[in-house]
Length: 338
Ligand SMILES: NC(=O)c1ccc[n+]([C@@H]2O[C@H](COP(=O)([O-])OP(=O)(O)OC[C@H]3O[C@@H](n4cnc5c(N)ncnc54)[C@H](OP(=O)(O)O)[C@@H]3O)[C@@H](O)[C@H]2O)c1
Image: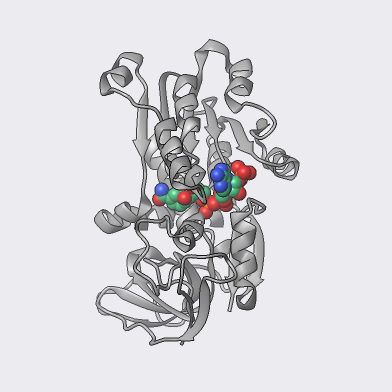
């Protein structure tokens, strides 16, 4: 089979080679998928740059989301069958014509469901679902701040917050993205490049503070966020995109920017900080991932969730796809078709 192999940590143009590699073999509890293509995630940019600690040693086939047809199943798999069209979360290995995955990370989808939306359902929507529904427990009228709200996970979080009738504050870095946020129903879109997001939120919520923050940016944004929380408020950290591409000194600066906290501060002020890494959840609690994926697919079928097809590239355009996501241009999901 063909695979786009990450051969070096370099620019989007110089990092991948299309190579002929062995097709993976199905084990018990696994599913082999002939892929139509794969989805990109921000972690792929970090892996390419060499700043993603979970990335396997190079040369490596990265990639977390595939969509395609089940062509073989291992023993013990009864949730999908050969011939089903599925969306699946892979533990790397996604940038390939065939991919294997645990059956619990795989869900059947309609034959005509758009490819560019289907790739969003696994990593990005499951992450958002787990963070929003399983960790945060939010109610109607709660004030929710979502950073990188126009991105893949951000779009999913906004849709979940809308579903729960929360008041939504969303940050993004361009006018086009702010217009997209407005269109999605974000009441308070904030351009963090032209305005200090914390000041903008404070003007609206005053001293009562905000109830929940979803932060994939890291660094100073976290420190500012904690100050914005009201009593009972919580902040969930699920990324550190502020560390991308920066040199070692800038990385240290971002690291220190998070701030240093004593647990007692959280108890006294009645605030909470959570961390989420879906790889750890997939490793240690695969049934949770399965539950999230099942709920996501059901909510899509019910019309509650509707991923935004950001842009679909061809495999020859993989470098452009990476540059597009890295350059902060994308809204919604970026995918690549074989
Ligand atoms: N913990 C987990 O298990 C998990 C799982 C999935 C994703 N994530 C994290 O969630 C975040 C979003 O992932 P995604 O795949 O949906 O990507 P994405 O949001 O579609 O794209 C990244 C966006 O982040 C924003 N951003 C803010 N600061 C940035 C910076 N310093 N450099 C680059 N971009 C920056 C940019 O939008 P604006 O400039 O408009 O804000 C950019 O478009 C990433 O941090 C990712 O690592 C974590």
